[in-house]
Length: 135
Image (cartoon, rainbow, N blue to C red; front, side, top):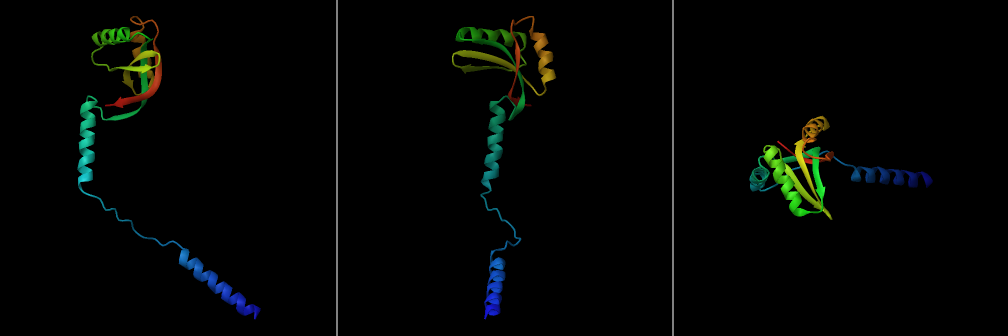
């Protein structure tokens, strides 16, 4: 009697483990073909709005100004754009200060070289690690 119960229990265990085991299969992705064209269009628009730089990544920028006067911040940005028209200048506001950070440098060495060029024009310049536009 005990052996019969053990055999039934063992057979039940084998059956249940077989029923719940995973089997290899395939995954079929069903999507509208317009999704790919929408993604391509979004990438195009992103490139156009960022001056040709669609992607962003980790990099470095040089901070040339930090202060609480908005007019002075925009004046410093204009002054920088006259000196270096090809380099991006980005104004951000973190209460109560406006900050101007310039450049899109992939390495710290590039940022340090540019920082050395800026020292004659700006009193306090610092390098910050942040997301930049990749070209």
